[in-house]
Image 1 (spheres, rainbow, N blue to C red):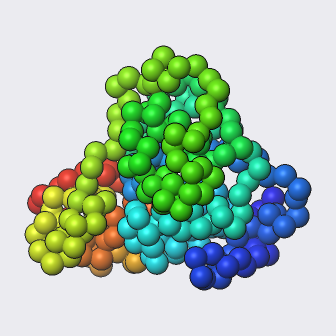
Image 2: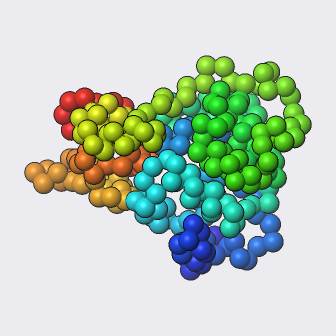
Length: 264
């Protein structure tokens, strides 16, 4: 089914947001998330997978409104409150560590399938397997604070191998960043040079094919062709909201996410 075809509007977080019309045409929705890192959200699973119901470039548009991980996490939770798939089966046979979810991520053998009718419970278990504190993920924290799907982590019923026997030791996690911390975001907004110490998109020009997918997907128009050479893509760092949509869209491994103190 083409999710872009005649999407329907749903009231989500007080706004009318278009989602795939298939949700009103089927009796059962099975969500198939992937075990993977995410530069903005640290790690994503069942709850974030529902974001795929928003068609096409409309997904990037929402990043322009929900500009940090906490507000974006709230959007994900609100979306799942409106449309909750009936079952979630996470493909953790081969996961992704490092700079996910774009092409810079590294495949890693996890060797698991994780299933649940409860998206929050699944995400908590997946986080623990990857070595993340489950409450580090804003979607988990927001859902737990609202007592959605679970009253508390202790309320969760887990029927599987002992977690210590299946935890992926050495899993390469997303490092903490100022752009994910509310207090640091406040300081960064007022002390401009602190942005130099944030992880940001960095273009690798000898890999760039000038397809301009990064230009089309950027929700705040921070990525544009150079005025002097339209085969060269440039980032206006002061506009960049660190959503990393550009890196996710790039199919040529031409955008890296790292701290870059000098240059553009």
